[in-house]
Structures are given as structure tokens and as C-alpha cells.
Image (cartoon, rainbow, N blue to C red):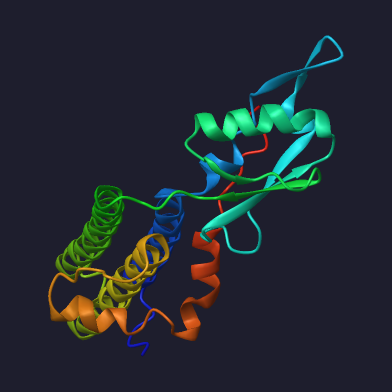
Length: 229
């Protein structure tokens, strides 16, 4: 509900939107499948006596769901199979189906309980940090409103509307941040989440809301920097 279109609350709204977009990116980095995509990035193999890049002959395909328990290595030249398998095993991917010369099917090792705890703790930390930033944005806007009242730049009645608008904005933004964090935790470790109280448990019921569908998909896909070679 829009209560005011004053510059103070509108500026805060824009800053909160930017923070939430940044949160999505930071959550994406936690437990990202990017490390798997980059397994062959700097690996070399010897072909006819010459050193060649492994990724010129084989590439990793995470499929439509990078969080799935398996992935494929597409083989463009059989000469790359031995090198690809060696790199995979060096990185603890030992369950490899080599029945085809065109692709390797790889099963990811299950996360240990400690790894799951570490991922959940990191997502909670990132989410809590974002909530603090959102609260700071509101606090800064309120200080600006109070200063504007003293300087008679804004009428008290309008200032009250602005304050109510800021209350609404922080409530919405905090809800979004909390749900985003829960979505990422569910993506990374599946069921068995631990909730920090009934409020968080209530937020969990919203992770499948349509408004979060595209964002959830965005958090799953690893962000590839094509310039990093």
C-alpha cells in the first residue's frame, strides 16, 4: 500500500531494492555449482605431443538443474577422456559412468552433515547482514525526515505519512530477504532446515509463492565470468 510518494521514502525504496538484488547475487555464491563448471578451466592435456586445453575437448554440462545430484561431461574427442576422469577424481568425483565415449555421467558425493551445517550457517549470515543493511536504510531515511521537519522542508502530516511508508517498506523488504534466504537454504540442503523461531517458520511457507519463482531459478544458476581466463 502506497501511503506517500515523498522523496525520502522513495529513495529508501530504491536503495532497498538494490540491496535485495545484491542479496540474490550473494546467496547465489553460497554453495554455487560454479566450482564444478570451472573444473576444466585451467587444465591441460597432451595431444599428439602438444599441450592443449582440456576444455577444448570436453565440457561440463550441469543440465537444467545445477543443484541435481548428477552432471555430465560432454566429450568432443575421446583423447580427453583420461584427462577428464583424472581431474574429476582429483576433485573427489569418483562415481563416474564411463560406458559412453561421448559423455561421462558423474554422481556428486553427498554432503556431510558438517558441510550442510556450514552452508546453512553461511546463508543465515548473508541474510542477517542484508537485514541489517535494510534496517540501516530505513534508519537513515527517518533521520532525513526528522531533519527535514526541523528545517521546515516538510509538514508534520506529510512526515507522518513518510514514516508509515518507511515502516511498510522495511516490513516488505525484510520479508523478501527472509524468504530468499530460506529458498537458498532449501536449494542447498533440501529438507531438515532449522528455523530460528515461529516467524521464520511462517516465512518458509512462502518459498513457493509465484513472486519468488524467477528469483529462485536465478539463485540456482551459477554466474560465469567469461572474462576470467
